[in-house]
Length: 566
Image (cartoon, rainbow, N blue to C red; front, side, top):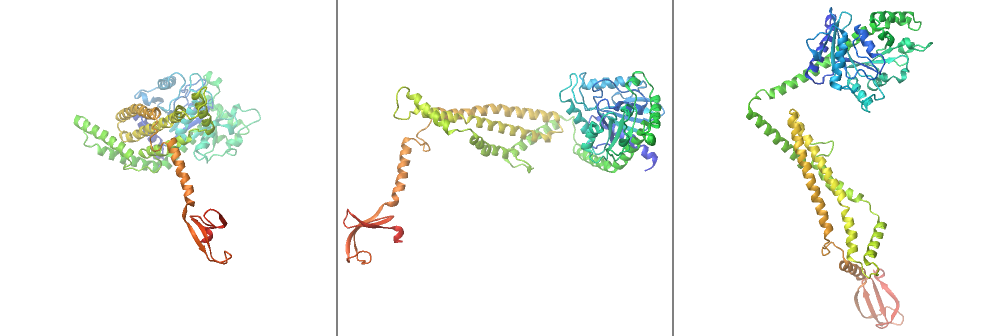
């Protein structure tokens, strides 16, 4: 690639950036760019103004940059500025550029120091600049000012992260030299997304304001916190110089003199200063675009093919034909209904292997979550016994009762049944939430029609919420029915009669094991067992033992058990 073609790379990316901004869409291709990151009063604005050689950025206390500023510098014989939102209008007075930035910021963010991620595109043509594109981001802050939201620090951090997390974005980390470099907010954020320091360029400002006897030599020589692309030191105008309208050209000469005369920086003076920083950024951005161009082109071609396929699907579509509109609308609504039914019934064409959803999750709520909630209910047996005792005594009053009153039983049982309301209503809420989540998943196919998608989701969700109230009423009614009447004739109910019957059955089971099988007279002729020859005895044979007697009343010396006879 020749030098001429290399010089055209940055303007080419600028045109792509403008095209995406004009469409009002975010660039999904991650254009190569440089994001300027730093804390408030770190000197970011002064660095950018030194590049242009003009005062054109808003200044003041608190957060001044409240929207990303995409600053495109273009080498040209004439000097003027253009805004993307003011096409065709050329600004030759840079004070008007500042006022336009402030007005455009307030138009989107309001007057309360709020922030917005919608960028302002500014292109500056000048013979004093090199082709370069920078994105000036809001300064990192810790404390909200005025009417700013309490989470302003989090909002700014998230906005900065949106830009610097992209692999195609170089990070220009601006840090003042009169603060501890280890506590630099800019370098800290850069380290999170670029731990190896491959995409980060360090800029050290306010070198002239360091305490006497101290310097940033180790930092600028890339020894303290090394970055692959190194550090560049600059000296900006002080607030006194800005208030006194000190010319930027004079400030650049003073900067050059500072580096040449300072003993700690004299040996690296040719690698310090704003002009050198501008050259470094121009070269770094050009090389970065060249390196990322093949992958960028592949992504662009892939998206182009995807869009062409999408356009092909609508080739014969006639938007002015009302019958086609009606047919298309009915088809989409019917498809939504089919998708919803399939997700509930479990016969969808796409099976989710990551989590339970739709009908499967509702099944789990009924068969796992609801029983779990019932088991989880607090049950104190000691407390229940005390309640039963109090209930019986309170119903008998002054008299001492002989039997357990029905009213005490009903009072205790009804109190336990009412406890089912909590788990039952919770299950209804979980089922309703899953139905709404299912609706949202089914409406994703209508994403090309945002209004239809929104209305479909709203109408179906409202219908589900209406059914929710009636469902809860029905559940509560079923529990109230159980509370209002206790069917003591039901086969599962263990009343006094059933309890007595079950007790007798248990008793029979325990006694049947030793029942008499046979009894009568038995002649024993075994001399080894009985002395005196053959004798007659009365015997009783049961399931567990054999006993014999001299007559039918008096037992003899022993019993032969079934175990012994076996």
